Amino acid sequence: MTRLPESGSREMRRGLDHIVHAVRDLDAAAEFYRRAGFTVGARNRHPWGTHNYIVQFPGVFIELITVAEPGLIPQARPRMVSFGDFIGDFLKRGEGLSMLVLEGKGAAADAEAFRLAGIGDFDVFNFEREASRPDGAAVKVGFSLAFAVDAKAPELGFFTCQQHYPENFWNPAFQTHANGVSGIAGVIMVAGSPEEHRHFLGAFSGVSEVKSDARGISVQTPRGSIEVMNPQAYRDYAGTEPPDFTRGARLAAIGFAIRDKGRAAAAFEGGGVKTAERNRKIVVAPDIAHGATLIFAD
Image (cartoon, rainbow, N blue to C red; front, side):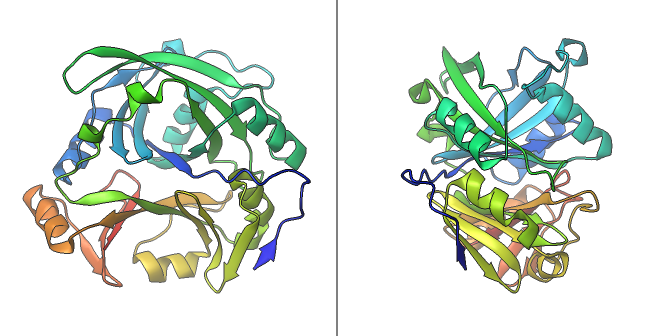
């Protein structure tokens, strides 16, 4: 275990905020998550050509996303990430987990921290959209994003997300799932050389202690863990093949916390979702889960 150099300022630890799951058929992916026992929100539209569905848990969510209106994707410009372009390019190579997003408590401060750490030099991106409550009432949600870049993971996107109307976004009614999932325990990346991502992972998460073991490196954020495993360790752990990491690290799996393994298994069986047992965990393979590996453990 190593400790990052002290920066002279108070450590800003950033927990998981959401994971972006890019898919080619958005409605089919949403239906898969429903069949797996998840509560899925309404379809939303972004002004830059992407549409999404949200799967909420306490303090963290999965964003199912696709490019639905490519004609609306704006041209890229300096110091700004084109969200629609990024998702479109990712989907040309296949479906899967495309972006890792951490909580943002101050987007401007995050952007400056990333610049000083050498992992980003982007303008803050602000936007709002309309959302729906469970009763169908329309409300406004707003976000500010601060982007970071891991040069050794060019096929992944990283940013923090600061919410401006959290009371309109988070809702316990959306966080209750028939499969008994109580939250997201963490995410797993795969890389040929996990140690090469040590500086980025520490700077992006704001966690000073980056742990090492035989599998790779990891940080424990205030909300969930982030692990970077070597490919063989990942195969041993998940029982599935990792995504293609020849061009750099890839986000491979989401780990879910479940209250009752029997309840989860019953939900999957009832929805016709094929699973496997691995290391006392329930695993849904990427050929079933639209390019992502989903791992459930009590």
